[in-house]
Length: 345
Image 1 (cartoon, helix red, strand yellow):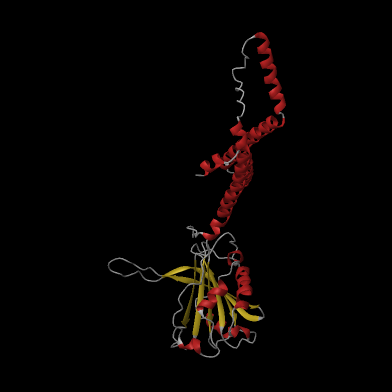
Image 2: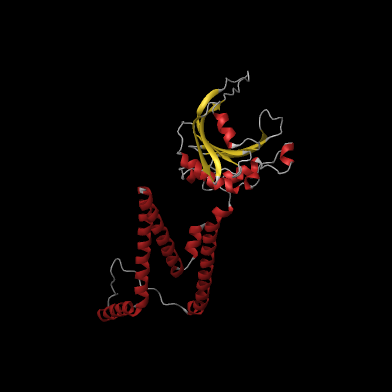
């Protein structure tokens, strides 16, 4: 369809358009080929540039012929006069084109109409190419993309579940959805030291702490990447950081280190995650829980006075590799100030 439209255009409209399109595409493809070291793209760019050079040569020849019509006419007149003196027909070179017949009266009358049609075709050509350029420019923004692999996971679009009763008390605890929104930052991968990755999953839940009969809110959010997984939880109890550190000594936590983060008491600790195996076979049973990879956790008190409650920021990977502690500190300094609730007091 496009080729048919191009053939309908006048020479002086079609060729400049082809030169413009060919030069732009050729230069752009060559730039991408050089930056990506792609030989196939380089060959395609050379084809576009050669095509453009041929079109430029054709236009230059047509311009020369149009600017010097008297030279060609004088050469034809001299040949006719010589033939009349010798009584022979004028000879022309085998490759020379025959002289065009003189236009008749009807052609002369139609000349203004043809010029008018050429002008209209030029306007129509510019409009068509403008419309095609607009469609090519806006199509990727309007049409939905089938490639979802490059899109980071989003916390939005999830139907909120009924919150436990403790979430309706004053002051209201932060919800899992709010934690997910605070954690799923555009720069989270950069904070983890893997700026080229995008989040594969992002979720938030509004749970309560175990063995508390639903009286202690414990929301959490988790964002997973190809390399690391980050989990942020908030425990709304009355346990201070000093009490929490003493409790760690009775557990399996290792590499415990106390510090101050955002002016609040905090503590680093390490512990293994738990791996579950679920079978989807006919029996519907799974294997026992196993010890998973090591995880690093930074626990930060809700407030400077450490009156109870804390955030846990945990990072782990399936390979068992852990980032430096400065990574968790960077996440805490970026994420925690954006969480509303008791952390403000």
